[in-house]
View 1: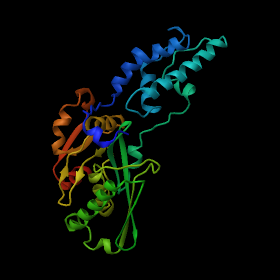
View 2 (view 1 turned 45 degrees about the horizontal axis):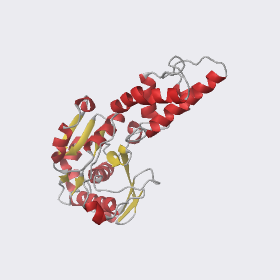
View 3 (view 1 turned 120 degrees about the horizontal axis):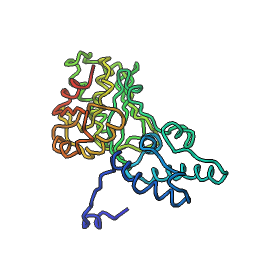
Length: 295
């Protein structure tokens, strides 16, 4: 880590992660030829279809760059090289035979499965590996005025959860929720992948939506993801990492993204091929988010 006084004197250049299209282009032009050369294979012996490369990008890697992508391509090349050394004639690597070479895929899109019940919301987060989807799960049980938070959350994220609960309590009657629900109810908010530390304010709208969905018994639309900071007055504040979050949503098959109104200029800067087929809803308040997200 760089000491804060020294960092203050530096100009920090932040680079956005590669898109799927970028990774495919890099793999086709540079990574596959390099692995082919390193393993002593010819073009006839080792070639990968674009569909197979896309499957490796989506199903075997989660990163902003291409380091693990090259490792997976290298693993494929080693399998082919072994076949060649044993006198076999390897077939081209395609979507049909990829899994027999690399094994079962490591990553799946869980959006439709995870958001099928009230209290579950798909949020968007920025990580060191690029954008990612982040599930927020809310549950209730008999109890008295207690909020439990799990999932290795940082202080800022815990404060966002408390602000979300306070806003829902203050506006309970507006959404048909008993005003005194908290006196006889214990609420548990959990963010899966508990081994991974999480922090930041951008999950505020997701947490408020999860609590409102749970208490109104209304599901969140399965094709919707959201991000944004909230205030106790119900305002939705802008966040960072918009491009990375849009890429994560598109990769997960989400076609509707709810963002703070003040992030609209950043969305307009995202390449058109990434936003094609997607709908963006810009929210000023938590009410805007709930009206767009709940069924």
